[in-house]
Length: 447
Image (tube, rainbow, N blue to C red; front, top):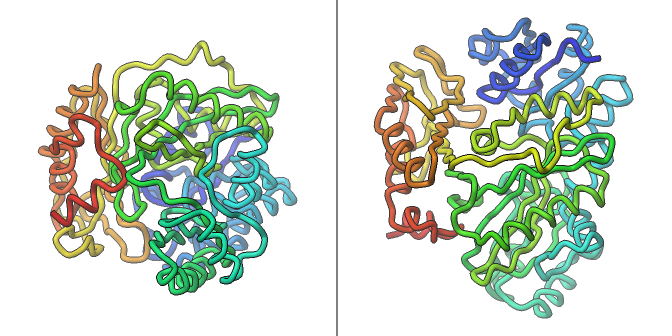
């Protein structure tokens, strides 16, 4: 039984987890770095403990510090949230060895599906379509050149342990390949301590569609629909919606089946997301699997009525999912905008500082996930997200109008934000008719 959970994260996701734990009658323990001492997640948790200085590698990413805090505070489990240690197989394995429940899948699954090359091979074995490419063990420059010529340009060069949009380059010809090769290798080594790379055919103007899946330890698997995540800049998602308004029901059926097939093939349990690229002819290709809760999970919660964090915790406690695919009902449409402390007029330079005034939108169908408060600080050491605004209505048009209204109401003083930029994006015709793809934002910025 889990009674007391250490939350190995910060900001809005830590608060999201604290709320779920409190509603379940479970205790929460927050961790914080020294500059995070006055953060809202620290104030809201039942207990809290400082684990180190500002530098993430000495605090939120320090396995020894996090586990020591867990032991000192007598916690039964650790919820990693997203980012930081959430997909670190070594950390999950240490938790298992220490008899601490890691709220997520077993370490072997994290390791296997977190390795993009291994995940790609597994998808092929499971009969899930993948992008043509090369993911062999030999990733020397000579082999990459030979395989790139076989696949045909343009190609994507990706880090095997990549994530969060890092370790990815588009290569247009042989001349670019050598410099890109060393650039990706260097970035991958720095970000993931793993410089292995692989190649995929570059799909022009694709849609980014992901499927939320849930599995338990007894072999039950359900999907909770798909999310459209094509509104992104430099592989970082800006706006997400559920369901996708750009795919047919036939494709929806195929893509959700492929996601559950992959989960069943791997024996997956916990919450997970299977991500796909979709081309203009509705051909779809497996891209990767995330073995954690996603930043954009609220849009799925709004259209299904499910609490994904609670489901995730219950599964970790050894419970069954408790409902079948036939029980999952989808209602209305939901859109999420991520509001960051960045200056779009200066190439999205981070804008850390103190929040001097704050007005958060409200009303029926508007949800705010945030750790911001007047006097609170946006720190330069971590992600710059201020809030996630989620709008839900009976249909997509209503959700768009509700989001426009919410963004109009939002006021944040003391730091620059992406609010106005987000309003511009959702006001574009390409967003209204759902024809936008992953290249839209970059083209919009350049225009």
